[in-house]
Image (cartoon, rainbow, N blue to C red; front, side):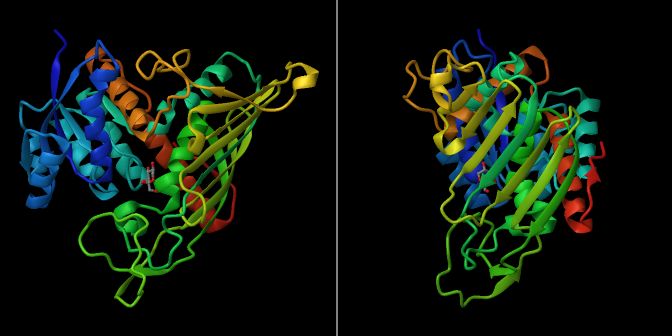
Length: 389
Ligand code: SOE
């Protein structure tokens, strides 16, 4: 009999929806499942939101008291889908209570917080994962497979972007994502860290960076309640406004420990770009190109392709590719954001069931935070900055 694990999910917003959908669907896709997720308690500080989340996301109970829930002996897994300022406190308490933990990205607001979280999970010897889900896109995992097999040779460079436009409107509300004390940073932490995760997954460790950041929109309309209304706009622009104290855009050069060089650009102010998470990697035997907006496809060119067929060609991911056993049986049926979360959920449960840490875990979350810190420091000083670990 497959073991059932009780989950306490702390938070019930956009990411709560993605995680809850994955809990429900994971065993339907990956069977036999490594474990059966049981949606036990949904926690939200607001009682009405907790109850609404319970019903909507299919949890058994609702609560407003995460401390009490995290300490409960019948909870096996704590899932943290709250804004960044509560990740550390909840994760450290959950680790002390011996719970396995999955935490949304970025792991923390600062390197210090991330280190305290890492120390706590390591001391408690629990399973830990940070939810950089885009690694779970089959085309991205296929890119890694090609790289590991040497199909594009030695990597020369990495070009990563994450461009969105939900914050391009100056009358878009002051979400918590624009406040340093809640988010830690702006585009750097929110979406730049996804690119950093891709770079580390595909190329290797980042040694140093030279970055610029910009804040284009310095104030935004105050938002009623804590709800994260990405892209909504107060067209009148007449209401009270609050200060934005994080970066809107980041552009950085990177040197990798293995000698490769690269760049990263992230912004949420790029009109026309929706979820434009891309990378282009050149090796000395070929190139790979990925764009999440066309996430079923990987563009490849191998140096030994016939001379009359040079140029990128498209591989459509399907059953022959990573995670193909669990996903859909025909290439082109297509995967979406939910599937990346379903695969993530599968890999987390596999780790819980086997006791082998998944990747990316809190070590990766911590290193990513070190890189984010170096980027922010470099943007401030204008200097090349080593990544401290
Ligand atoms: C907003 O930029 C956001 O929701 C990010 O926080 C997520 O990590 C990304 O996957 C989608 O966009």
